[in-house]
Image (cartoon, rainbow, N blue to C red; front, side):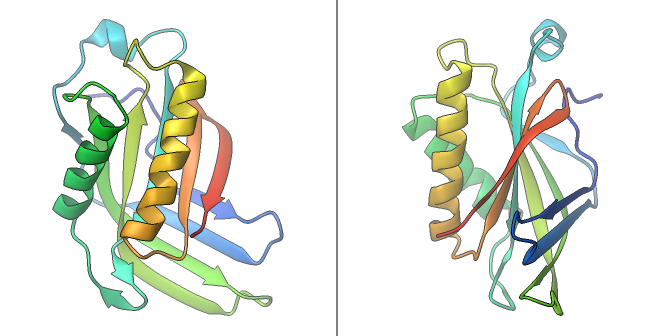
Length: 165
């Protein structure tokens, strides 16, 4: 199935240049929840958000894909989004460098979670707020140094944010 968003590799650099990250997908993308019909997926203005999350805490592998997908389902429901809301998830590798010389490099298993703004009761402003709130909760719950969010319109990146605790 062709997805209505960009799932390819993504490179992120913080505005101050002190942090650089690269997500490389590995494996197949999959749906969580019911697969929306083609008309919904290919609307003229489909807004989506990719959230990149590592599975390590520090250097120790801690989380698995199931931990993340169940947490996202629970928390999207708590935000008032339809309980059967669909999202896309895919494993990958996150490599990041940090520090003034960006010399410290860490590579870890990770995921991208792609939320699609298909809920008719959630306008674009609410969607953006819900995604950023979700990312803020994610960074704390999964004990991450950062979570990167990439907002897209019809698969084209429009805004990228780094969320820290």
